[in-house]
Image (cartoon, rainbow, N blue to C red):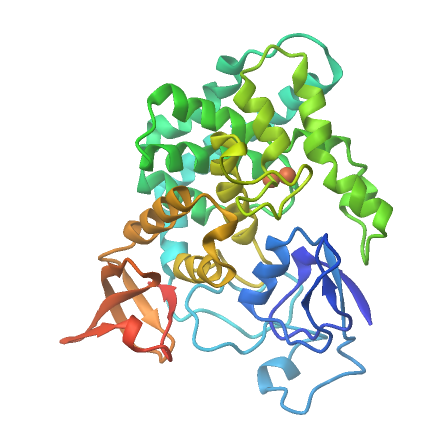
Length: 390
Ligand SMILES: [Fe+2]
Ligand SMILES: [Fe+2]
């Protein structure tokens, strides 16, 4: 049995113990074989590490040639994928995409390279400011904090283009800073999609930047601890919204920023923490941030693949149910995510290439696609999914 950080999970691994959420409910049972979607679900529940069967002692009979070429667990032989990047250095996996994927094409564009450079500088600057904020009691100038991310929005626009950039940019060496910057940008884009005023969009951005500041007061050893957290450690992590609220309280900030730090883990149906607030009692900026936060966590980088296909992310939200989120916000968010990729080429799970033509309002993860001369309504074909964007 191995203890592995959630960041290091790959499809094909087998759970050696039940996976429990913060409420001690079992979300996945021992013996389950992990898939992309299940790994995202573990991430979605804020679980930092799990127990995995040791590959050397539990080698399965149906292992394929691909796995035999790797030590321990390599990338599992999934159905045809185009967005899997080459294996990391040091890996023996024989796996190479046949031609550049959608994500790889985005990443090689000059526009993306400029975006990433500005993003990295902004994150570095933000890291410095955030630590300064914790150490000093001085008032915080939100305008100063927003300069760098606003520059990013200015360059790439406030809508789908920025969204696509964020979606394709994933750093996994950073627990809080890049995550907060991504949530800030997603908040701005999501607020634009909802038609919020420019001051409210910027406020949403500031809320995203500071929502997890309380995490900086949770000891690093707990945040990165391999294996199961004990109840005391769970409680400590669950207090980061309260720590954040306390850090920000005396700094002359807008109350929505304080409320977002405190309430971004509250859920619309009352199932969140730390106060178990529900519905409209949760600040609207916190309700928006909850969605960007979960989206960001769910799509964060994995060593074995590029970003998760947006339609898979939408599907996970649909499976989990929308009742945890503000219905208006989550529908706006997901339908705009989907709309970003209408007219885009994609690959279906049966290996056929298609073009996304029209979203289905009742099931955003299952649009109508065109395959050659045929139109295929994925609502009518539960056996088919969109595997990747091309
Ligand atoms: Fe958080
Ligand atoms: Fe967060």
